[in-house]
Length: 378
Image (tube, rainbow, N blue to C red; front, side, top):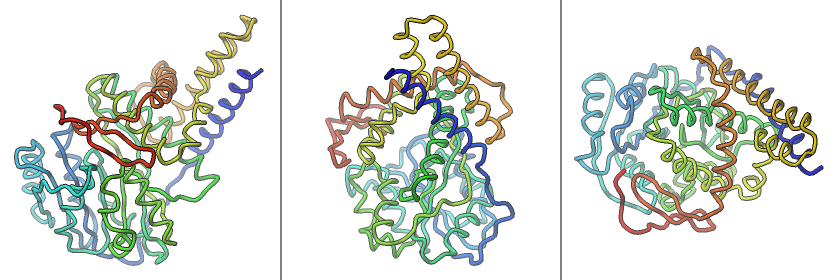
């Protein structure tokens, strides 16, 4: 009875998520009423796949006045050469590179962002991870969300793309497209947005200063989530910017993917502990397998497995339609992805340790990072 209820709930959730995903539409021909000058803060670390294309997309915006500040910690970072190529390829853009190893806390990404902000000319900040790619209309969509003076911050949903076609990268992209994005759409049906995603964190400089600046985020594992939370606490809205960013996913191995996703999972666990603990109820394949293992009826066992596979296949197709993915369908990958999500969820309770940019950290119950030992090779 318990496992039957588990399967029923998980099936209902996946159907709702599919419905929300298929209903998701972005406005067309969007144009802001005002065009405030914008500074894009881009923390970069290492030579990631398609880094030139990703970074240069932010320097080719159809927007009247904007600045791009790239930041790295050391001159020998391999990303420096790529950034200089971007600067040479976009001579008309206002681009600055800062090399600054100053740390304001244990979150090295936020330290990098804070160093970039020292050179910011404008009062609307846009922060985006280095593995993101956008079209020329991106900043217009950001600005449109800030036409409302009650909006203090904004963020974007994102979709995954695996350019290398490797199994680990494809599993990583499937997590974004077939689990993360639909789960956010379901959550937003029941509550307002009060957090940000690393794909885009846009914030007014005055609001950032009011909540304590980047120093307030310097030791947070979930810096993106916390920025939105702090803005919401001070009475301002967090807007869902009408744009979906493309995330270039490259995972060198399944082990690297699991380590990456464990950091995500432990991030969510620190900021939404109850919701995270109950999230296993949304995985339909584990529910189907559990029911099949306990039921005495072979026919019911086969039916449960068929339901699980069918629902994951429907979600896979829905994601391909919504994201206009023309690659061949990989239904077996969708099934494996759901089982892997459950495995990562279970493993996230084992320890509070995470790995990030070659460093090991311990995460306390408040989501703060503490450095462990010496850095490892990335």
